[in-house]
Image (tube, rainbow, N blue to C red; front, side):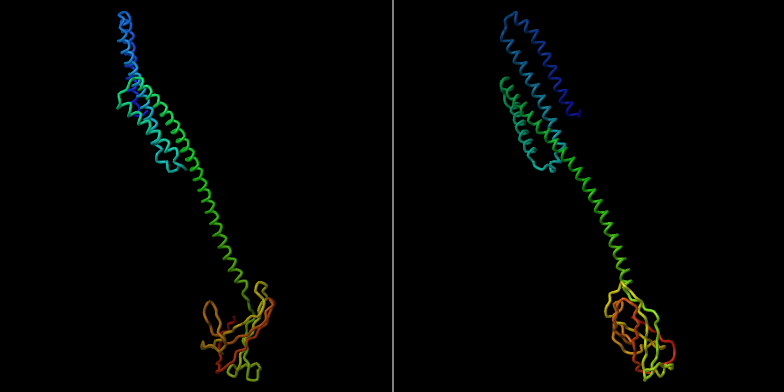
Length: 295
């Protein structure tokens, strides 16, 4: 019980005690009055009892109204969660009627009978107010439970989305690795790379100075992953001095344009393929180590 409720309770208790004392006094006086036949005095005392009873009833109703108002106010901040504000409007309307009746009881002088009728109206309005507050609190409680359930559902969905996001990230990484693997697998591997010098008659030449043509030979290994069809093979031959021998078409490798010594197009059917690319020699070659690359 809070301080406010204690004050109202003890005020009501004081009125009740006063009422009991007055009734006892009146009973004693009633005996004297009956002996003396003073009926007017009895009527006055009866009106005093009625007035005191009305005051006590009014005080109880005020106390009850304040408690209802306190109950409603503590949840007032949660009105935004209501799907409609019908209950709030009903509460405010009933509250205005109660406050109007209380104001009339305090400001206007009426007979005990008139006050009793006002108190009955007040009792009916407070009963209506009770019912509204009860429905209001039930609605707030229900919405609170719904919001808690929705919060848990959102947390579960969020956790599931996080899990799915992690799975997608892992799948993307796996796909990227697989794509890289496939890309590597599609590349053609060559073996047996060799360089042969030819003279002006097209015959093999042992002396590099007399070479008029170079032949770069290699074997393409079988590869079922690679796409079959026409393939262009490029070769680069560098002299001991580091200069490029021959002048073939350019090609792109790792995003850069590169000059070739020579090129040849051959049909590839995924099986083993022997290739020889010929490079024309336009200047005198010197003995030494030559670097040969095939693409």
